[in-house]
Image (cartoon, rainbow, N blue to C red):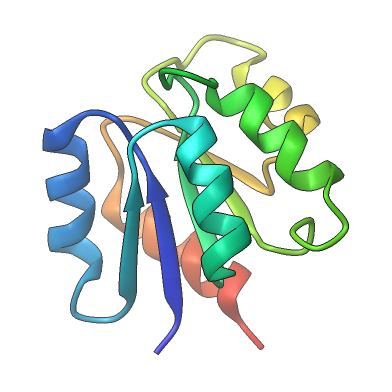
Length: 120
């Protein structure tokens, strides 16, 4: 079973993602960007879903750090944000995200991106 690391500080958002994904994936959860990086290093998930507005280390910095690490840079990373402003998607991709989704999440879009990024 593929493992997904959810890096999200809002409990309601974690619960939603767990409900959507728990039947098909093994899920790991971290509550801030620094804890997310530690979990990625320790657990080597198959994919990371990361909120961009996180405490301790925000998702922008965590994504850049993750993609700069030779051991972690190949892990697909989907940035999640409530920000839907022009340029936010491009900013997330520049930070290292492989994909970007805005909240509230479109379930079909989420599953399509997961399928595309987790294809072997």
